[in-house]
Amino acid sequence: MAKGRPPKPTDVLKLQSTFRNDRHADRVAVNGTLSAEPVKWLTAKEKKVWEKWHHVLQRNGILKETDEVALGMLCKIFVRVQDLSKEFKTPKDMITTHMSDVGALVDKVHPLYPLLVEAEKNLLRLLTEFGMTPVSRSKVKAAIEEEEDPFDKIKNM
Image 1 (cartoon, rainbow, N blue to C red):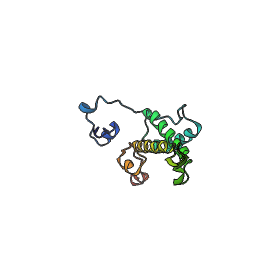
Image 2 (cartoon, helix red, strand yellow):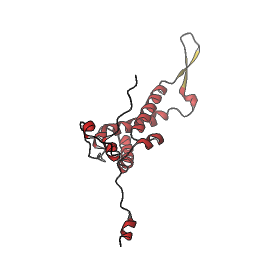
Image 3 (spheres, rainbow, N blue to C red):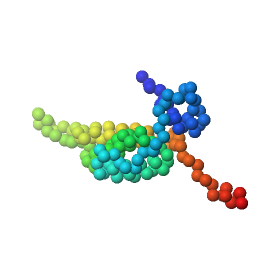
Image 4 (cartoon, rainbow, N blue to C red):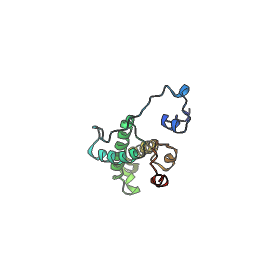
């Protein structure tokens, strides 16, 4: 059964001037930005990913204070995909051969390959949530402050 489309964030509704107090007043207001300090439960490798992506996402106005766990999971899964991918340098590495009970050679999928596939699916889902894929980037309406036009000062002189 389909869940329906996810609701638009409150910031997006306000930017589009479609926020209605009678319909959207019960939403939790999230105004604070996410700290640049990585969460403590990440490894050193995952913290480096955090620092890189936090900067980019924060610059585009996407991260809020409630995104801490989601960004942490994104970093963990990204590093997991990197580590698992190192096991499979060629397509032949995805198949293992072993001797069956009756002495026949049997080809099977490497036991780590399904873990890699699942991690890749989870990574893509989280990347989409953060607007880090080409299609999702067009859908994410980040609240970016308008910069002051330097030519306005010259015009007013």
